[in-house]
Image 1: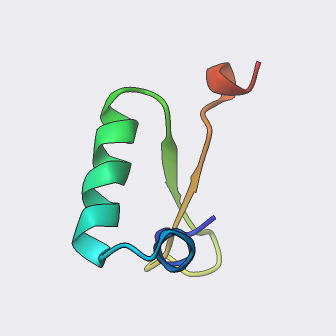
Image 2: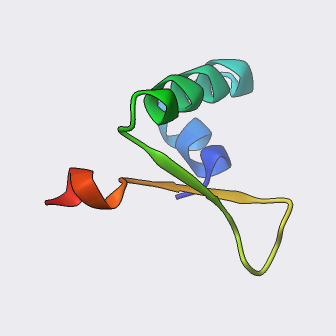
Length: 52
């Protein structure tokens, strides 16, 4: 899922979504990767250890 899509779903501001994503990433609960087709875009998902 992209941060922009998450923004749409949660109806939060871009700054609020960025802050939440940063905090979750720092805690190891979220993994952010660069989209291979469009390097300007990021993808968010659970890290491998959170899936098990």
